[in-house]
Length: 346
Image 1 (cartoon, rainbow, N blue to C red):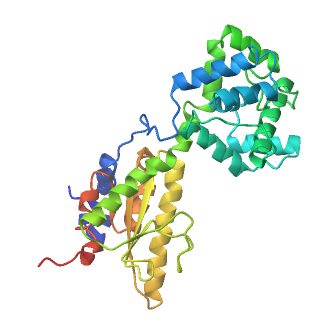
Image 2: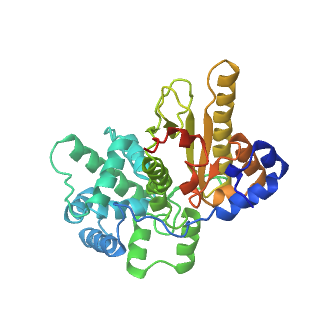
């Protein structure tokens, strides 16, 4: 059975299901393995920071901003531990701090600080002084202590409060009790179910995962000495409401556009198929208006594309079969118009 990119449009349409099966056979998923990334914190480092926070707060009996400031100064990862107790993202923590304290704590500051701690877990964090950064850090620590002390208030039965967790539901006493006795395993499993294991880390490295596919495309183009432009996120390119990931030879007169799409979720896959279909429509409209038609290539990876057969049919027809997976990227140049942009052999 030939690959879809080797078939004519008539051949593709005549046996579309077989071509879908061919693509599905090449799609694999590595969702069980994630890149660690430069900001990954190993458990021993996290545990050490937890013990520092526990010690500075007297076993969580004096959970004050001053005690937490001493903890993060001695072990910056205590900042991450405190955020984990809250169960907040950096942006959510910043919003709560600004709302409760009146200090302008931007979400960008909180995200940057959180990342700085993860990248350099031994660089001290200082909340002293009257600098803007110091005031913002103190505000974060103050609101964390306040929220933990308050615990989860009563809410409407149809709602769920974010602090309604095993450790924070009853205020600081709950944190103190779990710090002394350990967490009930069933409750730990339940809260893990609500939060998804490794969810925060998976979100933080999602761009790294996508970069693997884009790097393979760049290597294929560079190896063939094909001129190309790789667009940046949210880049503006005339004629495109959303810039393709790659344009050959450049964005001023593209003859080939390449979309790199990786997803482990079928709903997201549908959105990405729609994106490729839109590019094919733009190409057809350009040709109808006397302009050039550019070829649309889709490079896909991840189990999300294996779920809906109808979506894969749409993708194959929109690209006229020019769909490549990591297993076939090595044949992308020779099987598309990209070969027209290779230097001629002497």
